[in-house]
Image (cartoon, rainbow, N blue to C red; front, side, top):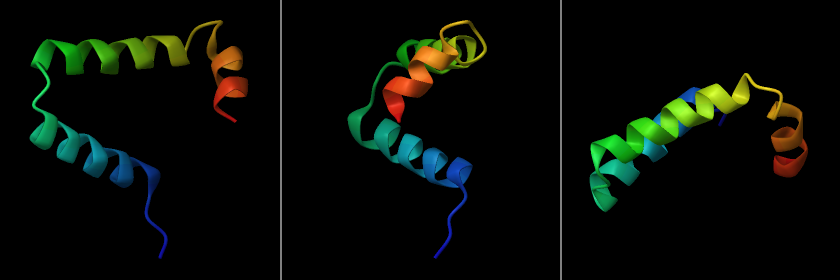
Length: 51
């Protein structure tokens, strides 16, 4: 079964927020930080660390 990555991330994120109940500001900071880092000069470093 092939599941799109965006759907899997949305499902894991939804369940994580529902079960762990992190503060909303923390969720927003992590999302914004990830978006900004992905488009910065640090992106190749993070890409090699993830793979």
